[in-house]
Image 1: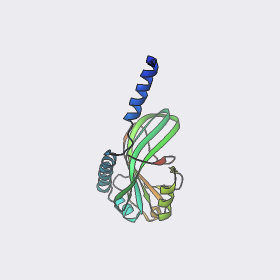
Image 2 (image 1 turned 120 degrees about the horizontal axis):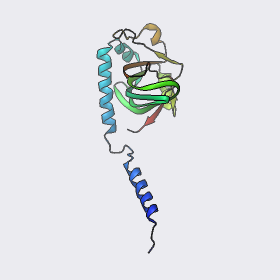
Image 3 (image 1 turned 45 degrees about the vertical axis):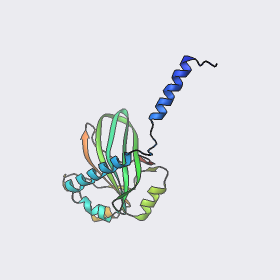
Image 4 (image 1 turned 90 degrees about the vertical axis):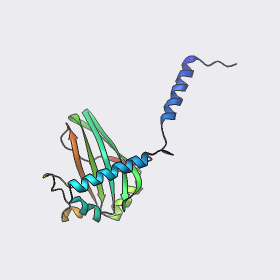
Length: 185
């Protein structure tokens, strides 16, 4: 009879329990919950900022991230999950992650939507193993609260970002430098 050292047995058991707790998404209701959050976020956006409905109608697809949590103290990071919608149907799910460094401290939460205004921009996003938002993303700002809207100049951009619902102690939120990766919720 082979005897295993107690430490090896405990380590193996802990590893097994940790791995079994990690879900692979098969048979889970993660997509249903995420779709519900996306629906609620779009409803809030369209009610609070009715001008964004024009962006939604003109876009060929949109990535909705209902909640991004960001925290920093010198080093910072943010994370959120959302759904890519084409024609009001969720076709893929993505995570959004960002890292930062600098003189910063605090935490905040916000939502954002990326509107893909061209088929090419949407195809580039979907075929990329990890798409990073860069300088080619145009922002629609909500300086006046309810005045958030799509203007003729912004509709000419391939990707338009709307950041809204900010709450917390950090000033400003941006998707520039955020990496989006396809996930199984």
